[in-house]
Amino acid sequence: MSKKLTVLAYHSISNEYNDLLTISPKRLEKHIIFLIKKQFEIIDIQNIEKIKKKSFVITFDDGFEDFYINGFKLLKKYNISPIIFICPNLIGNFFEGKKILNINQIKELSNNGVIIGSHSLTHKRLTEIENKKEMYEELYNSKKKLEDLLTQNIDYFCPPYNCINHQIEQLILELGYKKIFISPLNNYKYYNQNPNYIVRTPIYRNDNNLLFRLKLTDFYQELKKNDKILLYLRKLKKII
Ligand SMILES: [Zn+2]
Image 1 (cartoon, rainbow, N blue to C red):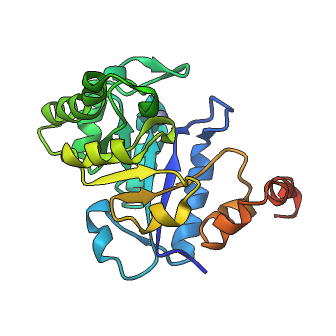
Image 2: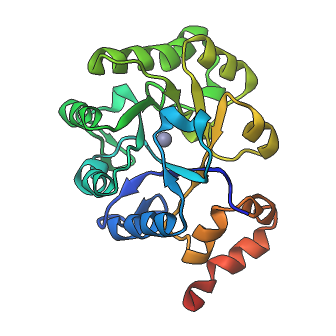
């Protein structure tokens, strides 16, 4: 059975790198074409409360410049408004060896329908921060810096490395964020049913077509519990 809302999580869109978090523009387009063919509706994140049919949203973490170069026009072609989660202190710098968007690129994307969310200030593991002031800066200053830059509200937060707990969740909401985007954590059902969270489907370079299709179903969460089956499915490249 297909899930009602599928929120896909990508990082880099490029032919230049071959790490697990980078997929080629061609592959991203294949994913989009598949979703459209399977009658998933393209929706804007602002409308997720109203969805009736199975729908999808696309997100990108870290704000790599390759999105601007390879992803933006491609998504525009299909009228998709993605969300990009950005760390303001990384703007214009390098992260994980890749260039991050600069201020002008972020402004241009934002002016052209791309939704900007906060990915904290510096991309630290929030669960390892003990200093209250530092936590506040990661959560609030990141929001404020992006809001000042774009003169619009920043409503969405995505914790780096998927590190979150109840206390941090409360603080994020108190500071005015509307939704927290995560990847599936152990207690999948809890997060999936909690309206404060949006549980995403992370997409990796080594997902073959079968895995991509399975990831669009509820069944995948069950399947994921068995590492051996997943490993086996990853090896099935040839038959698909
Ligand atoms: Zn990240």
